[in-house]
Amino acid sequence: MWTVFPLLGNPENPGDWVRRLTLYWLSMAKRSGKQSKSSSTRPRVAIAIMAAGKGTRLKSRHPKVLHEIGGKPILAHVIAAAKQVAAAQDIFAIIGHEADQVRAAVAAMGVQFVLQAEQRGTGHALMVAHDALAPYDQVIVLSGDAPLITPETIRRLSEFHASAKATMTLLSAEFDDPTGYGRVIRKSAKSTEVRAIVEEKAANPQQKKIREINSGFYVFAVPALYENIGELGRENPHREYYLTDMAAVFHRARKKVVVMKTPHAGEVLGSNTRAEMAYLDARLRLAKCHQLMADGVTIFYPQTCVIDSDVEVGPDTVIEPFVQLRGNTKVGSDCRIRSYSVLEDSELGDGVTIRPGTMMEGARIGAGAIIGPFSHLRPGSEIGDGAHIGNFVETKKIKLGKGSKANHLTYLGDAEIGERVNVGAGTITCNYDGVNKNKTIIEDGAFIGSDSILVAPVKIGRDSYVAAASCITDEVPADSLALGRARQTVKEGWAREKREEQAAQKSKQK
Ligand code: UD1
Ligand code: CA
Image 1 (spheres, protein in one colour):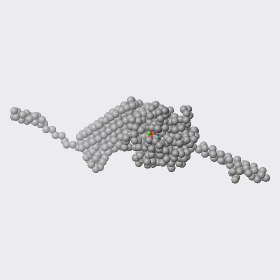
Image 2 (cartoon, rainbow, N blue to C red):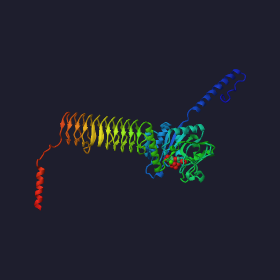
Image 3 (cartoon, helix red, strand yellow):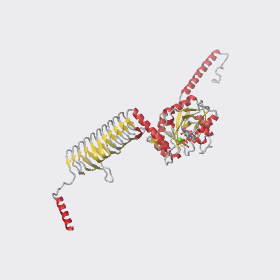
Image 4 (cartoon, protein in one colour):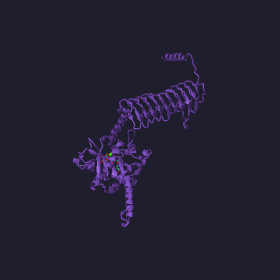
């Protein structure tokens, strides 16, 4: 009674009346304060990424969203954009086809997963996500196969939806060739309100001429979505629940459906075929090159370079044609990476020169080092500042100290090599005895003569010499010379005698 009829009090007692009026104002002020607070609190926003589909058009054994573009799975690009907009605990990847594989591939990104065990369409994907999404006010739905989407556009779409007070907002784009995409049917040409989305296969000739396409990115008011999603039918060639049909469902229910057209049509491109993937990959990589160039990197013929999205390169580094920088490679400034080199998950300090044809994986190169041509640096290779690794040198799990050199035809594995060491041409660390990997230690200043075999485990002491063509099986103490080969013998006149013998035999035969 008090809150419903606060003004009713004892009419005989005006003081009571004033007290009650005051109490009423206070309670209203409190309530409206609460209301304005709740309307100003930001809506609880979730992001759902549809990634359960098989990707039939790829003719692939692997799930579509794990095919790579710009060196990482398509889905990883979409998740990365989503993470710029929402926290990982509010991002739900809807997975289904080869779900375990998809989950494992992006697990490190920390997002949540919803399993759509049977893939019965994009509308069905949202149906199975009900429990995950119910606690939210707004859900942004992203297509897991459109990797070029930017966080800015996702954010703008969400804000557009909120300010339009819409039930459903879709992102559209204008394509010269809209074939294959759903078309947006606006209420009228000028209106941002939408009547329906018509899929290519259901479109009549008139609708097929519409060049405004549905991008597959949406925002929904969550309660309205789940109150109405049951209206979706499967009257279409694939017998699937189409999320696109929600536009017509809401339109019939007199709920507001609006469209926001992105001026950057390229960012909504999907990857349904291998040809589309190649196109997106080229686009993404060229964009990466342009970003690096804007940051001060010189790239000759960027069209020929393959640089993954997460690669970092410092200013004034020069990248020659046909270079690949893959994975988490980080390159310092003032480096030069010459043609046909492939660097994967490697780190280069400043001023490093990579000569042509160098292969590198999981290696770390100190400032000013010179590598190549034709060097092969395998995981765990740590090359010190100013060191040289030359042609046909293979390294694995080694430390090569400052200023040390291994310039020709050498294998160095499981080795700790100090500073100022010279490793002669043809040196081989025999690190593997068929069962175990053994370590070779070469201390500072040692000189390993050409064609030496170092049978590990073995240690070459500081400032010592190993004579050329030695087979070293025992420790070489510091400051000593080790000779591990048979002494040379010379038989004078042997060749002449042999020739004379042969000549005598020939004349006998005649
Ligand atoms: C969809 C839209 C189309 C739009 C186009 C934009 C529908 C019916 N059509 O078509 O209007 O122009 O995107 O790219 O939505 N997925 C699931 N579960 C499923 C089915 C699909 O998670 O059961 C996922 C897919 O993995 C994919 C995304 O949803 O990442 C879109 O599905 P896809 O089959 O590629 O739809 P399109 O034919 O491209
Ligand atoms: Ca698609």
